[in-house]
Image (cartoon, rainbow, N blue to C red):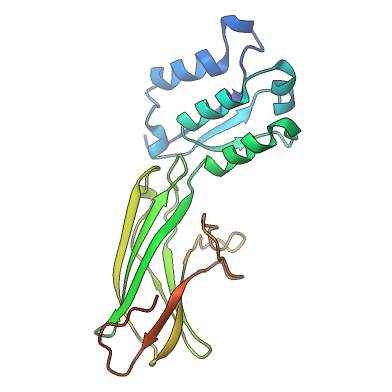
Length: 228
């Protein structure tokens, strides 16, 4: 079925049977294959909970770099730390780990112009995380100035954006605003009031969760206008 999986005891490098057996080196790699779950991450999230907690790993001398690398190989989307702290010595690798797990959407290039009363855009994205997004959150484009605003919800399904791949979004969108100068911006809308717009892995986020792409001028009789 189109499900992911959840398991306990991430981090265990021998807390039960010493070097003879551990979750990290025996149970997880063997049983992800035994239960044919090696590609489950493409359809549903992979969730891990800590064995004991991270400070125990540190005191036991376990290799945090190995633990992180294996979890990313298994396409981890979230980690339950049991509300415990991170050892100070591991702050940097754990911070980098959190940024890598799940999906991480970067907008690499944005091209936009006006032609025949249409806003034409071409967007180049990359998912630099280790998993896709599992919810059909729409990409939203916003054209706005002091007097007017128009929004479009694009049809692209970001659930298909697998990690490590480039993805191109193209659209020709009908314009309903009056001639003038506008700021073009972009967001990804969760449609969940408590969350709002997704935080992308780029700079420039405004208070509404949009990211500015540039300025667009719309004339009375447009030729091609590329200013963003």
